[in-house]
Amino acid sequence: MTRVTGRRAALQQKRALRTRADILRAAAEVFAERGFSRATLTSIGDRAGVTLGAVYFHFRNKEELARAIVQQQPDRVVTPADSTGLQYVVDVTVSWAHQVLEDVFLLAGARLVMEQEFFVGSEQNSHRQWSHVVAEGLALAKRRREVRAATDVEAVARLIVNACTGAQMHAHLESGRADLPWRVMDMWRCLLPAIATPATLARIELSEARGRPRQDPAGATPNARAGQAP
Image (cartoon, rainbow, N blue to C red):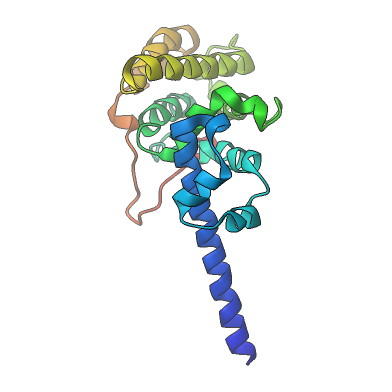
């Protein structure tokens, strides 16, 4: 009896996790299409194929759903396995620009960026989140003398995130984000000569190919934090 009960509990937990994942994906799709203000829990539940009660079982409200999607943004970005230091900072932004066109969670995050005041505080918003990710990569680059000694890591990190956010917004209006990767690479062509040491500048790879998602032989995908180890 105990074994049967344990199996039943494990099956229920598996179903609950699958339902939660389905609700999150449905929310990402609805937020990407409608934004935060026009999305409803009913429409999200309908998209997921679950009852409104099931949505409330896993998430207290629409705000909690939006926060869950925004908070996982950096971990969804796949960077090359050899990405580290300043190359990592370049890669994570170019990879994001490519993958936002293909990953509905990243697309939802891009759409939600203008409505964050409705569901997350300023200390936890995506600008702060991405600035921290970029600053960590730049700090490692500075320790390795890949960037100039006078580089203000925190200020440059904010500048990069601001530029990428602006590029995303303009690309959305002008091309449906189709040219977002090239806008981000244009930013780097202007910025790299100002912050990189000459030797580092000569070996930095800035190409569309590095921004495409990659998988290792086992099928696992590295995430945006992979390049931050010292």
